[in-house]
Amino acid sequence: MKTFKLKLIYPKWQKLKGQTTFNLPPHGPVAFAATLPEWVDVTFTDENVEAIDFEEECDGVALSMMLSTQVKRGWEIADEYHKRGKLVMAGGISTMLHAEDMVKHVDCVFLGESEGRMEEVMQDWVNGKLRKFYNYMGNLPPIESVGPCRRDLYKRELYNHKGVQMVDLFHASRGCRFSCYPCAVSYLGGRKFRPRPIDKVVEDMAAIENNRLFIVDNSLAQNKEWEKELFTAIAPLKKKWISHTIEDDPEVLDLAAKAGAWYVYQAVYDTSDYIKERVKRYHDYGIGVEGTILLGLDNQTEDDIKRLIDFLGEIDLDLAEFTVMTPFPHTKGYDDLLRQGRIFDFDWNHYNAGQVVFQPKHMSPERLQELYDYAWKSFYADESQEQKMFRLFCNVALREMEEGTYRPRDRRLANKSFGKDVVRNIKTVNHESIS
Image (cartoon, rainbow, N blue to C red; front, side):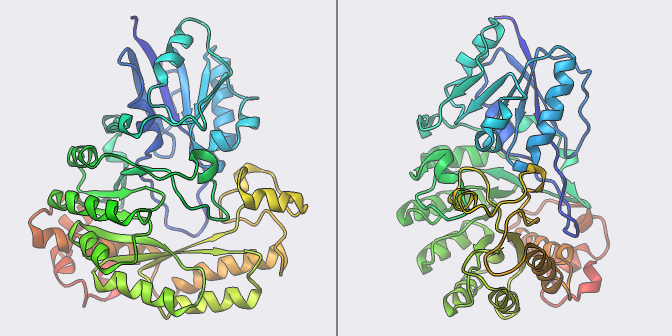
């Protein structure tokens, strides 16, 4: 079979103003690349860290998009390649959410997970029979078919923030048995938890050179016995990792800490003692917490949002990430607000979880936007987001030093005279000495 040269592109998007900007090596494109036949020669460009060379020789182009704010840029890229006579295929989460629009701009829309499907698609392409749609949604491949990502496609030197190497993304499972109001996961992959075989997870994770990972599973708290088995199995690898929610159980938290849990994303949805104790329990096991706070739900008044913001100062969060309710297509939030006539902005570039695109129930859109901006400024008034993030990096470097797994790949820690002192004395260092 003649080699087919495929140009794989991850389009750029506009970052939110006022927040620390850093780029993680994207997961979707390299997971997709791993499913391509051997006779496909793929090159990869992440437009967030390097410019696209539109003159690079290729036989076709594939766009991998995760965010709604990448969609319109994807159309622009497709237009540029169409001028050069190239066919363009699009896939990924935002392609699935915006398929009705996407099909107007690209030659092929791929919907669903790509394991076991790309031989057929690529054969059709080289034979001049590429279809407009390949729809595998609801027809999920066996989870055992998920293999290692093509991380060799990354240009590693592009993924660091001020000298600190960014984490690699990794998945131990797919799917989610929950159905949270603003979330599209149940539409994309159904409400079934699909854990990968533990031995495959360990083998895959062990092969990743980067010692710091972000386990991007929708939630690890979906099966307690699986969690315990997973954490026990990966502990010998001595990786340090970030994840979404972990089961609120002492045994699970203890195993997670021993397995290298660095910090977690934990939804802070009210001002209850449960949330306060939840954060404390993570900290009791040495696990940091980044609170995720959603503003603009129908059950939130202006006073509720103000109380929630004030509450964050009481619960000792390491980081906080604020978003405004965003009605992404194919979510219940979108269906409800569209039916009620409350969505006034359909520009997908504005669907970045930081811009109000609908009429809130208890306040004006302008007031919700003001509260969102106030939340960021209030939480990071005494110590910037970048300083808090660097503190977490120092914490994990300290743990690596104690275990003998630290490698001075972070130039900011390795090359400055204060580096090791900061790491060894992180709990007593003041903000100025790490700024």
